[in-house]
Amino acid sequence: MDSLLIKGGVPLRGEVTISGAKNAVLPIMAATLLTREPCVIHNVPDLSDVRFMAQILSWLGAEVRLHKATARIQAKKIKGAGDYDLIRKMRGSICIMGPLLGRLHKATVSLPGGCVIGARPINLHLKGFQALGAKIVIASGYVQASAKRLTGSAVFLGGRAGSTVLGTANVMMAAVLAQGVTVIESAACEPEVVDLVKFLNAMGAKITGAGSPTVTITGVDQLHGAEHEVIPDRIEAATYAIAAAATNGEVTLRGARPEHMHAVLDKLHDAGVKVEREGASLKVSRNGRLKPVDITTLPYSGFPTDAQAQMMALMALTPGISIITERIFESRFMHVSELTRLGADIEIEGPSAIVKGGKPLSGAPVMASDLRASAALVIAGLAARGTTQVNRVYHLDRGYENIDGKLRQLGARVERVEES
Ligand code: EPZ
Image (cartoon, rainbow, N blue to C red; front, side, top):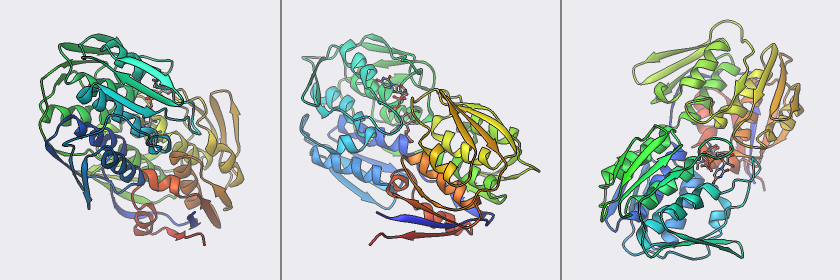
């Protein structure tokens, strides 16, 4: 397993291009199953999660060609069932269920396992499918949804932590070909859901209300092929912005969309970070001393859970006390123990982490555990004195395109070490 060797203490300087959004492209790739016609998707990031999704779609019978940042996909004939262990490896692939149910009226997938950040249930996805008339059977690790026909209906998708992003995507994709009108209440409002709706409507779907808690889908007979450009990844942009602040550098994020990042930019401002708009880019640097901030993660447009770990790394460097509360996932503090190994002073109190920041961090070998926790360790390593070795870098490669190359471009001393 590869690791990243980071020699810290170098302020990041220069420009970095933000890639297409992982959490938009995965459901959009799944949505191509809803038509037998060819679809073309641009600004596709080169990520292992994208390659996984491509494998699953090919496994299902679709023709998939990934070339540079474009995906050409045509699902002429597809299977609705089967044993694809890949689902277990990638939570995001659960979003093939909605389109399979929508197109074939049946879908069988292996139950997605939990992961380090939480149990990751799919009860709300299944509640939505049942509201459309599907029968759900869970047996020997598989979940099967089937329906004679799908009929539009009203469904409330609010769960214990607010709405569900992939649940909203799945139910929308099952409803686009249903008979009649479906109204989703407490729909997720994330920009990635809005981007999926833009693609579905380009395919001929009739969806309104995207980006609001009430989404209305009027069923149509069939969908046609479409071409689409994926939005930039707001979490990748947040990650590089935080890395710029952590290293006291100055970084221009090419292609970042500030309108998708209000909560992050607001907290960075309070933390003493300057963010200036430069055309279609954002320039990030410190604005004097860093200041401690309190953060609570919330559904969009609140502070994103996917940027929580990265902000914690920044707060570990910031003199003072910051309280970071995770309200979306039940155990998304895997990075705390590893940050502590670098010298951070962090205590967990229930859903909150109390960060007593300001002591300089010193490099050490650390273990990546999930995608964003790994990003937090990279940020801390970039700011720490000495060398930090981040192991199990495959976690990073799931969601960050060419992260070591992009960091080197910004002057970081980062080397990818292939484990023999
Ligand atoms: C998406 O996961 C993202 N993944 C996650 O990003 C992101 O953290 C999450 O949304 C929240 O924003 C993709 O889009 C591929 P949820 P998703 O359903 O849709 C509970 C990353 O780092 N819940 O919105 O699976 C759930 O347990 C990844 O890029 C139910 O209770 O998340 C959680 O507490 C990590 N029942 C909360 O809702 C359900 O049926 C939010 O989960 C579904 C979810």
